[in-house]
Length: 331
Ligand SMILES: Cc1cc2nc3c(=O)[nH]c(=O)nc-3n(C[C@H](O)[C@H](O)[C@H](O)COP(=O)(O)OP(=O)(O)OC[C@H]3O[C@@H](n4cnc5c(N)ncnc54)[C@H](O)[C@@H]3O)c2cc1C
Image (tube, rainbow, N blue to C red; front, side, top):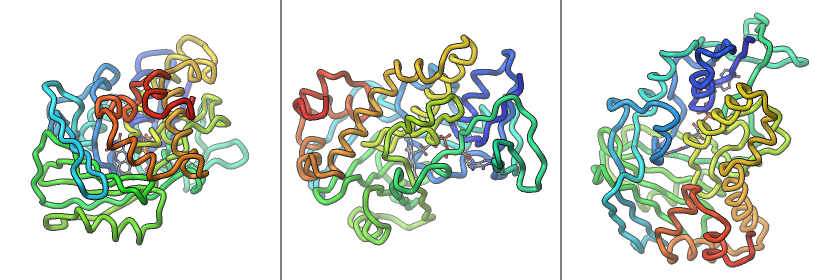
């Protein structure tokens, strides 16, 4: 059976990787001339190496601590003895997978009346086409802007910093990078606001500036039909904007459903990924609709037990954790 995948991001490449050597022949079509070009801070939580390989050369650093700020004041400075995650070189990480699967570059796919074509008009022949084209296919209302400066500011390579504000549904970050750091901000605000706010933490010589939209909506239930994976399905944690790991897990869930001839929607809805993303989405929607105050959320995220906040932030939580943090208003 021939499967065409639209988009060679973490989701599309991971799907091809999981289906390699099976009865499915997968071709990934990528509109750009290389992988890993989309703006991203390259943070990855530990555990994903159980799904896809992360080679040594793709690891910039191992994260062993984090600092949390509220309205420019440091509230937590946590260092642990274990690895919490990685800063990866995303292009190298993706390239390592792309080299082992079938990827066709510089081919942008367009759907017309249920059929698929390249921009030159060539028809794509496949038994099944899957969208893994990220935020590009999402309605604007389901996404928020995120901007990022690459600078030469040197930060401890094992530490990531998060800056929360009482007047922003979102946050700013400083992540270590190969030659300095990535200093970014994303949230429910317009770009001028974000550009102004990030000035408070911007340091070092600016080497590059870029941005993209990122989903903060949660899973799009109507896309749970086995034709969407990754951010195109909404697999981004709305509280953190973390999308690489969830997109890879969504690809695994689809691959397993295909291989075991199971219903993807049913399998996906049983997963921890679905429940944790949708729980975070409820929190974000609650603030947008005014059921919860932004100030209240910022305080909860910064003043509660940092280990509990970390569990909730990375999607490693159960209903008990949510009740401990938010009371019964979410569950
Ligand atoms: C500024 C910023 C910082 C971020 N930082 C992090 C982070 O540190 N950690 C993290 O986990 N997540 C982060 N994210 C989110 C993360 O980048 C995405 O959620 C993740 O890459 C989604 O993976 P994906 O494979 O679903 O989609 P994408 O990575 O967006 O890949 C989609 C691919 O499809 C291609 N494409 C699109 N349309 C077509 C078409 N019609 N035909 C062919 N190809 C097409 C695109 O060129 C792209 O290569 C960040 C996002 C932003 C904007």
